[in-house]
Image (cartoon, rainbow, N blue to C red; front, top):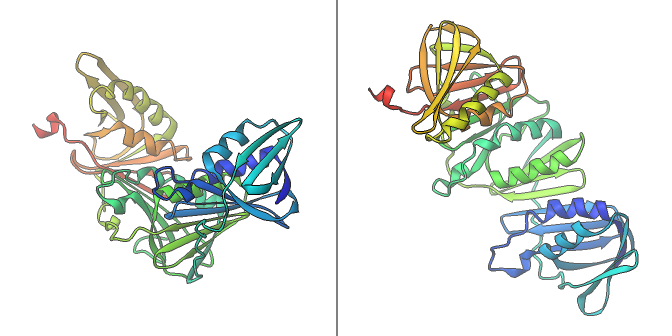
Length: 377
């Protein structure tokens, strides 16, 4: 096994693949990256038994072969190599020679035969979608997925296709952690498969990074009852699906609101971030109050101080209202909305708030309010 590669090419590939490698498994073999030299180039693979990835990188291959290298060791070495070409040679007894300029690394590899192969998902349900569109959809939902192990089904993002009542989209991504919910829809041509699958947020996060390293192109999605795969250019990602019943998100979305506020996205984000300085000392609570056609954003913390911001807005509906939210749940969504203005829809003090972009994509964000002493009284 022998090939020459460009340091930058291998580093970018290893940095993607090694994120999949498990460091806590009782099966040591999956702590390695599989390197396969083929006529067409070099393939890097990782598999943690829940999720796996294959990535092709360009290289001048003079001798084919395969070997396993500990991911941590390979990642550490490649990141420190100087720019330029590096020679990779597999010698006797699994010793790997990495030569660059007048220097050399000699590291021990393992036979590739025991490495678990990545499953190939049967083309039962297939969807093709533009990488840019899918990337935006993931980015606008993934932050709402739960990281708690208590409700495992909420650790994923629901992907569903087909018509939905009152919805013009034919593909939707939905994520919730019980305190907020993000739904992003899109209408694209050629979706025939009826799909409803919960994909682990970790897998979607790796897919997002994979899509962000490319430019343009489309993604081919194949789904079976228990697995899903994504093929994008020279990369292939496969993941197990989360089994269980995802909450009925339609029941969470308010049918109407008492007040509709049109506000500049950046202005609201900046005000909320300033209020968060004080709110962080008091359970992250900020109060949004509408009066006299203006939006007041305030926070206070004992022994720290208080803040009040006033924003010029357009208000429709009730003239006055006051609701408390976790400021982090507000700033999170404002960071992923690209439109200049948003609609903030509010109801009674204990009703969820709703955020939608003005003249933007099919995106809805629901945030639950916080019960404060003022409301309780």
